[in-house]
Picture 1 (cartoon, rainbow, N blue to C red):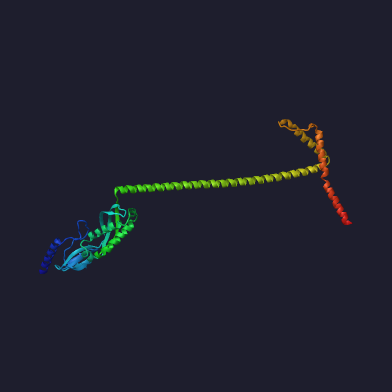
Picture 2 (cartoon, helix red, strand yellow; picture 1 turned 45 degrees about the vertical axis):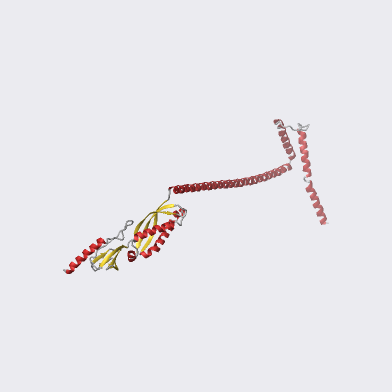
Length: 348
């Protein structure tokens, strides 16, 4: 009975203490989820991913692990409840000045986790508020090192530098900053308009460059096509001239062979009996045909006085032919005589 009364008295005292105890983790600026400070009921069950900081007679005693735990009434008191989960904190929008004196409005998101519940409880009064203020000041200092253009291009590097700066200071508080992300960057309207004009000018420049490159490629292609066309045309003319010359040469050879064959056949025919009469008849026919064509054309020609004397012309042509026939075999006869003289001399 006495033990039961003692437990009831201790529970009532703890409830009064709980009502009067301030919630150090809750501030007007920031609030995060955490279990309310439980009272000492001797037997306690600590949830997973939470650390309960216990004080004995006002002094830190130990940290309760998740699961079943026992405390001494009246002497032990749960002073802090720390959540070991990853926390997300919204960094309020703030103004910062870049290296080129442009005022920016930037907000972000901070991800952190409590690694040491003892340092988080006794190292700083309000860990969340301290980390938030540190993130804001670090962001201002890092933005002051960059120009406006680099702020947009080097977001990842900026986030990494902010995380490194926060971790250097928050190690004493038992808190680890995992990452920092910039949500929005707001620039003044005039600067935004100038940036839009710069983007449009850059795109017009790219379009102009692309058009000029296209015209250059087109001109090169046209010139290359003309060059290839001229080369092919010259090669075609060359092949045509070669084929034409080859054809003419073959035609000349064929004509010469035909003429030689005709002359050979003519000489064989003249060597036969009555060959002279046949030649006279052929000359007379050609002369008559040529004479009949004189009146068909309006050409001014010079004719001998006896142009109508066909027999005289034929006789003259046959006389020339007879003279040529007599002189042509003279060479073989002389050669035979010379060869006969050489033979007689050799026999002597």
